[in-house]
Image 1 (spheres, rainbow, N blue to C red):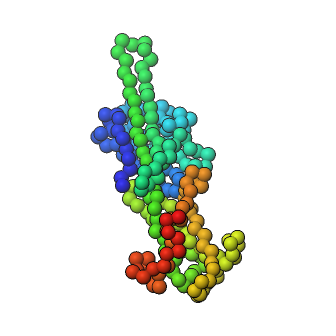
Image 2 (cartoon, rainbow, N blue to C red):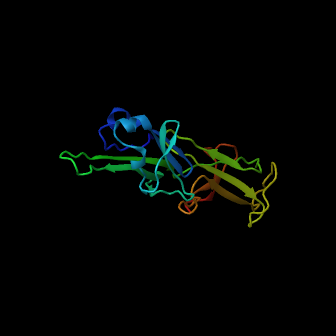
Image 3 (cartoon, rainbow, N blue to C red):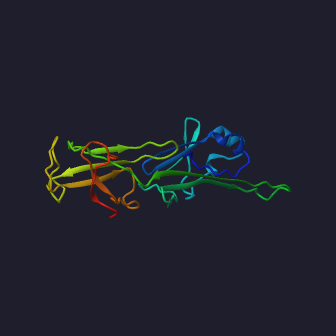
Length: 215
């Protein structure tokens, strides 16, 4: 998925101000060419995110706008559909004339950019259990990334993880923690929908035992 850039200023159609988007965990940023903004008549101090107090910072000739969930939300909107959850914000400006001249000119900008993350992940953990757990790390073009881990424990309090490779006997009870890094736990909840075991290290193997189904 390509970054969602909704263009509402005629100068944008020629080169998008050399826009570069970056998404990582619950952080998103969009940088624009300062020179191209200047040529279009947009001084850096006139641009801001949804929250007018969140202005860009100059870095190597570019104006960088950034939001995160660690005290720098900047009016970011959290949305979701059937496949992704999405953080969305906009770079905005509305320059008005002073009204002292016969001809006045208004210039305005609204560049909406989004960071999308897949809602559903499939994670496998080999039967020869490793103490650090199975791990999945996805990086999708134009999308953000986050990390999911499965860690096996001996106890229901999740204080004693398995150490090294362990053989699990039939009907032996064990506890598995599923941890997610890179998302805001105050906004995103993890749901374990299905869980199954296979006799070989292949999640699509035809023989499987369902442990959790549509919970």
